[in-house]
Length: 392
Ligand code: SDX
Image 1 (spheres, rainbow, N blue to C red):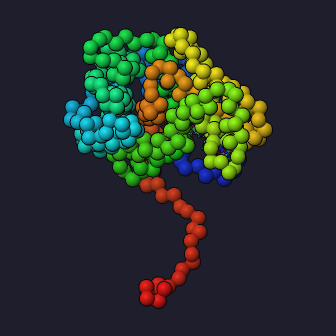
Image 2: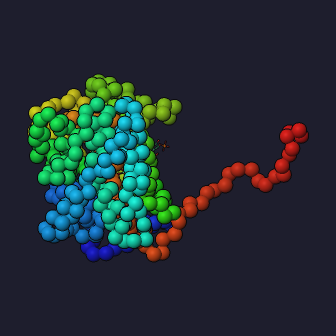
Image 3: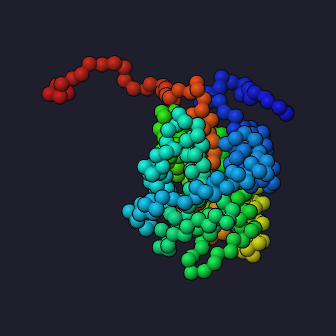
């Protein structure tokens, strides 16, 4: 269909909100951002173009994109005192713990963009969050490996800057590999937004109370960390390593089907997709490109491919419509690029910040929006009178 269309779920929708950013058809495996298919955006656009599209509703023209890139670039630095925040953490702190803390603290440093009633401040806060997440994530990695922080180099692209801040060292020049840069930029696009997933709903609910945008994004980071959500990419690669070789796949498929075993195939299944996650399709193709460019092979990729093939032939997975999701292959690529598994969800948070701030802006700029207040189905005792302790 072309033009505007209303989505009739065919049932009394329990929709939590109205939104025009992202459309998912879980049965058909369709994902659109402002009407554009994820496959086309992943193959033809850049993460900054998609960020502009989600924030503003239209793909930018050349001048608009240059201006947006320049604006984001100018916000990549962190207040110098925030660097001391990192030194309060143990070196082995999980990067997501660090990001929760540092992002939550941003409102203590950037007061001039916390007045949510001012559209100008809202946009400045949005640009600051998109711009600073790579710096914050890279610093979390550097701190964990005991290397010095690198300041942003604004002559590089958004993703190139992140790669250099993460893997560069002061002692020598860091040359961005364009194939790796493109692959990582594409991975960021695939993670940018995804309708009302758990972490985005968390950001919206927090934002509906009027909390400042930095606090709301910190809440989203906390929610994304869970293994059922963004933490699945780290868990999926750990699972593939635990399987180790194709001969062990049947054992793990049997465990995933065993109701008495809490084990689930990480990177498989989805609350909405009952078809192949279109992002997983692009992700698998990107693995092949990165492996070819880096001239690496990883037996884990072969395990992943065979696990997918065997699971998709298994009645249990077919009947329950369980397919690979965005997290199934992403870890294989991120590991090949050099990221430790502990950084995978931090990268997911980096990319999803674009969707979180776009969804937050959409909600907070709606004059009709009210504080979120989910109700419950009460299952506790009926009313009864108090009994003093000496009579209990
Ligand atoms: C993300 O919402 C989003 O959009 C999230 C996300 C985004 O971009 O924001 O797409 C990112 O979080 C992707 C999902 C990443 N999580 C994982 O890969 C973790 C492994 N997957 C599962 O834990 C699970 O599939 C969930 C949490 C994703 C969904 O769980 P549900 O809601 O229970 O799935 P379901 O209702 O479709 O399950 C149907 C059945 C259930 O069995 P029955 O109760 O019917 O007997 O399938 C079973 C589930 O137990 N099942 C699995 C399974 N996933 C579901 N069995 C084995 N392995 C699995 N992975």
